[in-house]
Image (cartoon, rainbow, N blue to C red; front, side, top):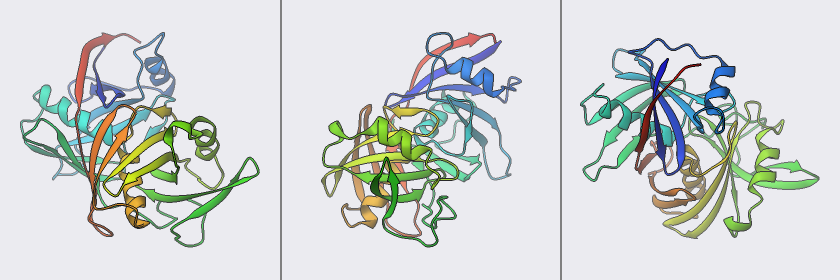
Length: 275
């Protein structure tokens, strides 16, 4: 029997499991079973709280998509991770450091009950995103369904392609998102953001997440969109990002600096499940 907590960050929903105080060894098939919204619990991602790997860290943070694949980063999940370890009294610190497969994250509780995540320094080199390009470019192009599509790309610990659109309501998120997610140009697949610039301090965003389809919110996707928008001189350094599930605030000073993401994290219910 597994004890779990159902949580969400702007509607991006998670099952969070304490893998320190209980033995957890889940197969991809079991994760898919848990993620099923009819026969399991249902979630966009499964988050595991594990013992830290490095001496300076408090925990290790692992993330699994609904299809059972493991990924290295999830920004909304990071805020839920911080709320979980405080609610479960695993830590009483106002700032925690967590190991991930893409480096360390710093999670900080703000006075207004929001959580700020230091998402690390964006990576722009094609080999680090990764994507199959010989050199870095502000715009990349690929052919999808016989149509050439242009986008910006960056890694926030996971790969992101960002496409600017005039209206996110009519953006072809499902069709184009799925086609790009699995395009050969992206050897590890890709998350696809559709960004509408409202003004220099405000964007609207929808994200097609690899392994999960479109979600109500994507924290790393919000960071990626703001980074690309700033790189393209469309945005200022602090930006409100409206997603279908709610709003995040993203701050990025520029190249070589980390991205800061601020937003809520909510516990929905506690449960136990036997696989």
